[in-house]
Length: 177
Image 1 (cartoon, one colour):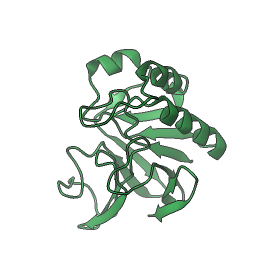
Image 2 (cartoon, rainbow, N blue to C red; image 1 turned 45 degrees about the vertical axis):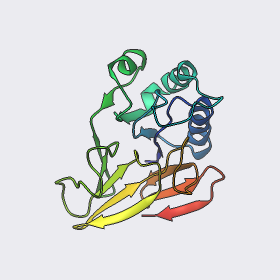
Image 3 (cartoon, rainbow, N blue to C red; image 1 turned 135 degrees about the horizontal axis):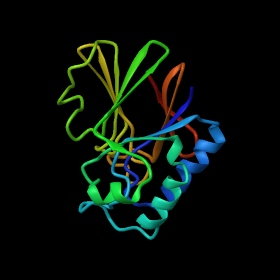
Image 4 (cartoon, rainbow, N blue to C red; image 1 turned 90 degrees about the vertical axis):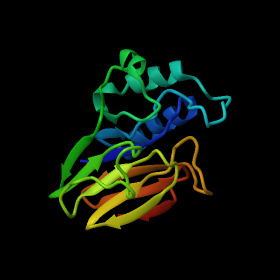
């Protein structure tokens, strides 16, 4: 099983299209979206490619392939227009390992979850790629595909039987967990 992972699209049509293209190029089975899908957010600039309606169309075309969690910018109205569920969290078991998916605004390395040792927490929210070990739980933040911060680049992740890799949009390996 292969999963494409992306976070913090923030209504950017080009980012949503990139997710679709990477999904097809990788031959992935599912897409994990870690929140903040449609709304730009009050702290982010409005870019030329800001088009929530187009993002809805692109994501809905993949709805049977999507596992999604709610971000702090996702609201009830978003759920009304999306053809897939925005969950508070998702848990994936792969190759004997547990992957806990969340947005990151409630659970992150500074506010850890009460989950089994050896698990990996996948999250976004902070728009930067970093990996931290807290009490034998790995916290992996994947930078935003639209608005990376702190000198990070736009990223996506791949989860498969070998673990998780984070790549730049030019497919350069950023890190492997």
